Amino acid sequence: MVYIPSNNLFDRIRRRAAVELFAKPFQLPLKTALITFSFDDCPHSACETGKQILEKHKALGTYYISAGFMDQEDHQGSCFSKADIECLHASGHEIACHSYAHLDTAKISIDGLSKDLSKNQKEMQHILGKGFSPQNFAYPFGNMTPLVKRNLRQRYATCRSVRTGVNRGMIDLACLKAVEINEINAPETCMKFVDDVVENGGWLIFFTHDVRENPSRYGCTPEHFENVVVKARRSGAQILSVRDSLKFLGVNAS
Ligand SMILES: [Zn+2]
Image (cartoon, rainbow, N blue to C red; front, side, top):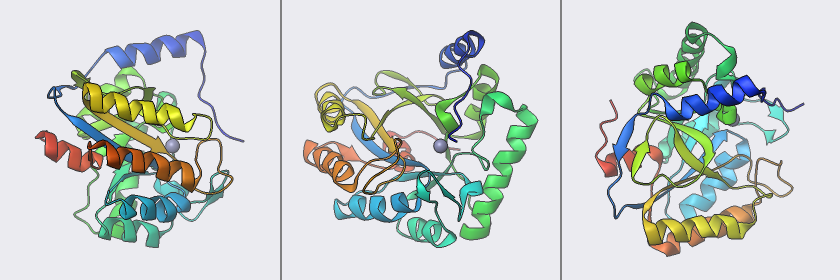
């Protein structure tokens, strides 16, 4: 069964407080038109089909990895393998952090969270070498608390949420907004966000999961994904991973 974080009144208020508090502000230059494609968890299809589509259109993506999923099978199909991570990294895609156990960060102590994140890094270092350290993080389930956000904004250059929207003006690097590509969102919805970022500026971060025929409710078909990538490529906006976006923006990622 797919886990869904608690959504009672207390949790909703705490989540709202986390959005407002402990920001990591950055003023996005007015004329920035930046688009990122990212994948969460990550399914093998994202590492293979998603990667092929991005590369066909000369783009690199960000893969938020939960190492605990390696070689597993779930509702999103086969998860990533060691070879997938090696191949993504060697091809210039970004390997980022999504916690080891795909934690609901609202349900674990800060100490427990820190140990889990270190475990994820260690697993990635086994594959990519001792010097590897992920710069960026995505909150599993998009869930967070003020305390978690305060802690993670120091550990990572950025933390991505699942709050829908374009990052524009004074953005919060500890709670970046994103837009999901799935089969529930009509392709036109994604296209409108691309038009918006070109017309009004901003940093649009797409995320999805599996990229395959008959995807899970969190994924999309290859055709849907490619349509969005083509739209982004033709828009004239820069398409960069989160890591490369930070370099482009001159954000100090240390
Ligand atoms: Zn996830």
